Amino acid sequence: MDIIFSGVQPSGVPTIGNYIGAMKQFVELQDRYQCYFCIVDEHAITVPQDRLKLRQQILSLAALYIAVGIDPRKSTVFIQSEVSAHAEAAWIVQCNVQIGELERMTQFKDKSQGSARGGVSAGLLTYPPLMVADIILYNADLVPVGEDQKQHMELTRDFVQRFNNRYGTEKQPILTMPEVKIPDKDAGGRIMSLQDPTKKMSKSDKNAKGFISMLDDADTIRKKIRSAVTDSSGKIEFDPENKPGISNLLVIYSSVTGRSINELVDTYADSGYGDFKHDLAEAIVEFITPIHERYFELMDSDELNLILDEGAEKARKVADKTLRRMQNAVGLGRKQ
Ligand code: AQP
Image 1 (cartoon, rainbow, N blue to C red):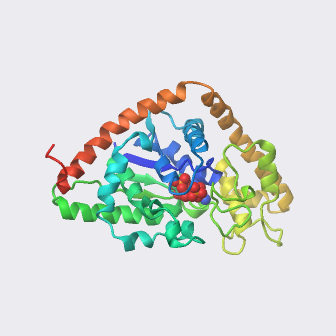
Image 2: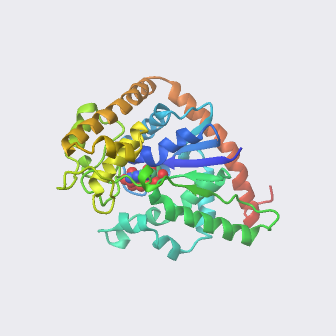
Image 3: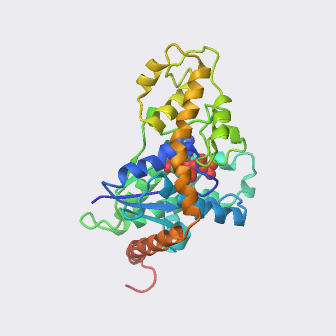
C-alpha cells in the first residue's frame, strides 16, 4: 500500500482553509493509503508562541484531526516533537541544501517581511528542511497539501534526487521520491481570506474576520460570512480573477456540501448576495456542528492521549529506520 505523510502546524486553531485544502483530503485518502498525519509543533515555533497556548493548540489540533474523521485505527496520528528523528534528519537535510534555495521560499519572504533580516529566527529560514525530513522519514509516496506548499514540495523532490544521486545508487535509492497532491483551485487548493480575497486564508491572520476557524460557533460563522468582502455586481458567478470574493465563497460552499460550483451558480442565478451568504453560513454551521460535538467529547476524555502515545510509538519505529539509513549513507557515527 502506498504511503502518505502530511501535517498541520498548531500555530492557531485550523481554519476552514486548512480543512478544505488539507484535512478533508486526509479523511478521503485514509482508506486507500497507509497514512501518517502529524501535528508539526516544531514548525510552529519558527515564530514566537505562547508556551501554554501552544500546548493547548497541539491537543486541540489532535482532537480536530479525529473529529473531522481521521480514524486512528487506520492512520497514524502523532506529534512531531515526540519523534526525535525529525530534528536529527532535518540537520542532515540542512547540510545538503543551499542557503540560496531557502531564501527563495515565498513563505520565508512573506513571514520575514517587515522585520530586519537579522531579527527573524533562523528557524524561519531552515524550516523547509525540517519539512523535507518530515516527509522522507516515512518513505512517503504522496503528500496531500494546499497550494501554498507547492514550493516546499519542489524543494523536497530536489533534495531526494540530490541525496540519492550523491549517496545511493540507481538500483538502491536511499530515500523515496514523493509526489504532491494539491486540490484544484475550484476544489479548495487555495481558500482566500474573507476580508481580502486576494490573500490566502491563514490561521495566524491578526484579523479574525478573515478566516472561519474550525472552532467558531454558529453565530460567529454567520457574522463572518455576512461581512465577507464581495463586489458590487450582485451576480453569483464563478470568476476567481474578476470576482475573487464570491468565487471563494462558492468554493467553500461546494467543499462543505459536496454540491458542484455549477449547480450552486444555477441555484442562486436569481438570488442576491444576502440570500446566498445566509444559506452558505447555514451550510457551514450544519457541516461543523457534528465536528464540534466529537471535538468536545475528545477534549474531555483520555482517548486522545492514548491515540497520541500509540501514534508516536508507531511513527518512531519507521522514522528511526530511515534516519539510520541516512546516517549510514553520509557516514555519521559507527556503522549500524
Ligand atoms: N488558505 C488555504 N487554502 C487551502 N489550503 C491551505 N492550507 C493552509 N492554508 C490554506 C493547507 O493547510 C495545511 C496545513 O498548513 P500549515 O498549518 O502547516 O501551515 P500554513 O500553510 O502556513 O497554514 P496557515 O493557516 O497559513 O498557518 P499560519 O498562519 O500559521 O502560517 C497545508 O497543507 C496547507 O497547504
